[in-house]
Amino acid sequence: MSKRFKSIAMLAAVLTLAATGADAAADVAHIFWKDLRPATQAVAADANLPMIAAKLPDHGETLSLNLQDKTIQLAGYALPVDREGDLVYQFLLVPWTGACSHMPTPPPNQIVLVTPAHPYKMAEAYQPVSVTGVLKPGLEKSQLFILDGVLIVQSGYTVRKAEVTGVENVPDAVTLPVNSPWNFLNKKKN
Image (cartoon, rainbow, N blue to C red; front, side, top):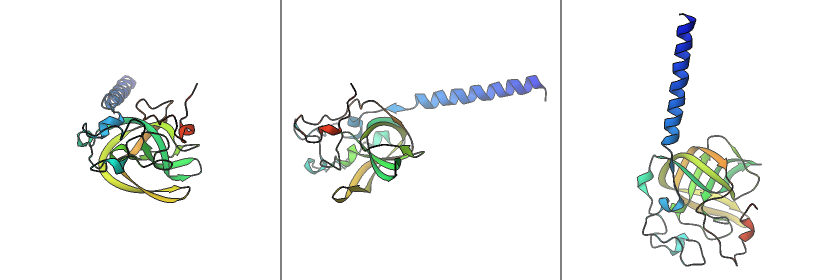
């Protein structure tokens, strides 16, 4: 085989890989928390509290199936489920800080169980992250070890082999009321 032919073949292979990567990036649906719940479900139980499962007629178990098996990107707050030191092997992605461990649990359709493709380094709970991967609807239970015991949390979605990156903020995060004792968890950068 001539050197010229090898060079052309190598160039064709590189261009094919680049095009495949661009196509894959174009197929990612950038979604928001509202996309994971039925349009008829209220965002909040009242003006001062985030939506909680106990106050919903279906307890938030109605899932959005139109995103099933689609590659999505969603920003939220990471709450470790399985960790060793600062390496997190699995976490719950939630729409507000304090969810599950300091406040009532959000509905399952507002919780995503995430397994990163590689352990994610996290210094503290509720770090804002963006998750990219294939969304699978389906109710799953996780044990969350909190200060005063164990809490079983039901998530409505899973993303396995997820790419996880830190972000500065979560565009559609639920804002806690001003008088919330958990406002210190909101990590706003000045």
